[in-house]
Image: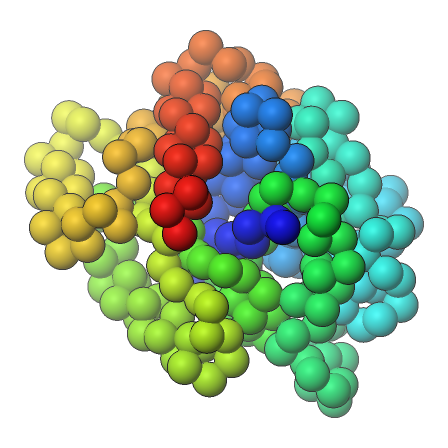
Length: 256
């Protein structure tokens, strides 16, 4: 059975897509079977996986609206070693079109159930807002991975996200829980980064992943080559951190 995790944070620019793509590639490097679901109309996780969002015949849009089954819409990230359910601009229209459909919050969940046996992990890259798309991601997931920068405003946004997760847990998905917080774009030279990191550990304890993702130029360069960072430059500090994170994830789900 696949373990399904939504990578979510209502704040933009915190490394959700970078985390989803590199975790998918790192898990694949650990010989795990992985599906990446891109729920963001920008399609950055699709492009970062080396899949041309303009050329794909079917996307998550077609799956959510019942126009194509997930098993026929997924494509392969050849360099990443995992499957992708792609997204592009079409997905922006799904918000409006989903409103009038039955079971609108759980359409992705129902489709993922049809390919459950094919994967060890399904990772969902959620958009930076609480939308119908994000709700589909949260309703279909077993848990949430929260990437966050160690800065003051990130702490404010975190409380909003935790409340959202509690509401979805209470009303729509009793299985949903916070799997862990991942510190990303971390600058060890910054006193503020260290202070916020300490606060997170004090408040959330073992919910904070031991792996820490540093600021890294090679990770930032990788998407322009259509490659996950862990494939583009495996020796880079950021890539090594994501490989360590994947190892930690594999261990952590054994106790869930």
